[in-house]
Amino acid sequence: MRPCSPFAISLVSLLLLACAKPTAPSEPEPPAEAQPEAPVAEAQPEVPDTTQTGILSEQDFAALHELTDAKAPEPRGVELEIAGARAYLSLPEGATAPLPAVLVIHEWWGLNEHIKHWTDRLAADGYAALAIDLYGGQVATDRETALALMKGVDEKVARETLDAAHRFLSEDERVGASKRGVIGWCFGGGWSLQHALSQPDLDAAIVYYGMLETDPKALAPIQAPVMGVFGNQDAGIPPASVDAFDAAMKEAGKALTVHRYDAQHAFANPSSGRYNAEAAEDAWAHARAFLGEHLH
Image (cartoon, rainbow, N blue to C red; front, side, top):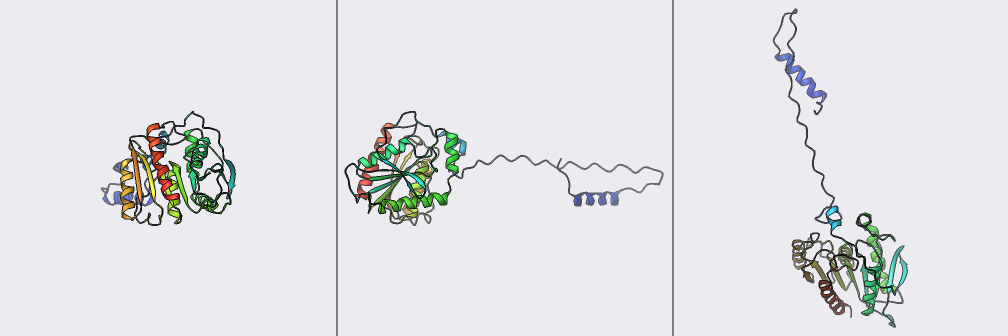
């Protein structure tokens, strides 16, 4: 039973005394009328934390991810450090600066061997490709660790790291890029869009099923053309969210190309156990054409 406040108890006592029937001194006073118990507040259901996971609870969002057992090919680039963050740079064989460049942002597992391989694939297409680590050197191999690492990202530090990587691609003598793009998957897809919002001189941005912005006013800073890749069976970034993003970009007057596939979340991720080869290859063909159009 919920305890009454001292003020309420005093008020009830005064009312009882005022309404009680007078009695002779020898007669015992009748017992006070029992007061009904105060209703016990029902326990409120726990509100799931969706700060980092969009419309899904953390548990449901984690369930969308599977890590493949397949091993990626040996990396051919070099490890380096940018603004205190780990990075992986892959350059086209035999090419010299200036080079078009692509900033690569890892998915929620971290900068693992599969992301390095994807970076090498971009280098094979003639780009100076730089994969930047936003997890402080850590790589996840299970969902719980990946979720913890994603939630632990300091947005201010992440933005500063991406800004430093963006500068590196134009300032480093091995790259000297005059045109720069960005690509990311899942966690990295959301940051790819954020990078386009913060870098007015970016030339292209590719968002693979990352968290989206649907406010046209918030999208106003974007200057680069954007390409989005989404799965129609994705519960984390469902078709309705993609529709809202598409409408907002149009209202904001921004260039957006969208490719949708009958596939689940993470279908094209280089680390994904939900890899859909046919859809992934088609999406990659569009990504290559998009980068070629805007960076060469």
